[in-house]
Image (cartoon, rainbow, N blue to C red; front, side):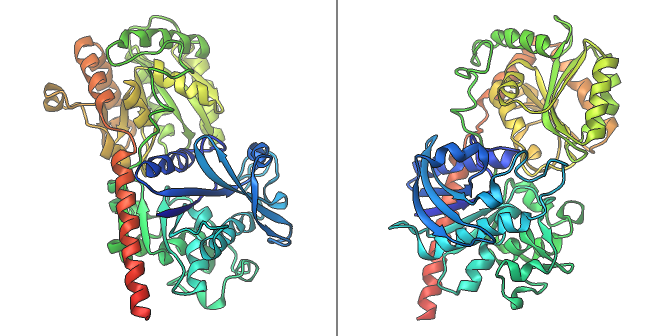
Length: 488
């Protein structure tokens, strides 16, 4: 099967979050199963160097206001289709935000263009390669199903994956004509959402299949608490909805070979983690040889991620003799809160505001536990990295966190199934209690080491999930054949 992934980011080329990791990893796993996957993404400044080695496979003299071309490139074991449109993508800073931290004023054009070109590839192919399935990722690719439906029943089938329903891509209805979307598409059943054009809503409504990144999150999306206003639509698409758990790239995330670590280790040489912990303490200004566990956080600093709760819980964490090393950026108030905390609890709390990929690997390799107190979490990847590195996840019991972390109940610890700690409800009190439980277990070295080894054995690769995607595509191909037969 030939599959076209359409996404706004892809690791290791450009990354703002877990979406990029998924888009960069799944095609490799699918290739092992026999699928031929190409990834269509914008040619941002960070990937422009790749264009020099690419082959031009499509051109336009006017793609929403400027010239554009599509270049086929092979890099990092991936087949890329880079959309080179300088008037849309050749900009400094964030791929989504301008220098003032606001959404780019023309994001509807920037990602509408990505969708339009994706649909062009699906309908006409490039050379002798024509996709059987279009796989759209998040709101930035949400118009793919719209353009394909406009093209007619013979167009390829489409699937959209919701990585985070909180980001929906809403734009003024005047963009309808600019984007080349037919007026009859602007209905509640299709692209209209409270008088606006909803990119994600459109994809969910019109894609043949809808997936999200964990089974629990798929169920949660049908509830008002998590559906972000789209829970009714999710309920309507229930029969076509599936939750396929994310995985991670075991070649990239491997404590035995990770070059970002001070000292590599395996489940049989966990004592070597101490050298990585010492390096973290040095980098974050923490006191060496603390008697309690070293917690880490690698996250966007937002209320969704529960980091405001962690600020409130810091006196209790420090009071337990524990330490915290935090890496992330986001809400200015939360950023300032952790800056102040690193001064107030100097030696026990350290914060680096920003993002550093190598440092995120070091934190996984040297911390004892990773905190993920999210109010909602579609899947989460940092807890999967934690499992892989024997850095025990301490998580809220929601979404993919609930699906991937086995709580350290007495029964689970005794049977050696426990891989971390979970808590509910998501509140300061719940977080304080789970931190105390973690610290208590840390003071029992044999049990702690046993849990680390159980965590490192837990399957976090893409193998099983890639098989589920493959089966979904195969079913869609059967549906396509049936539809074509009915047309005849």
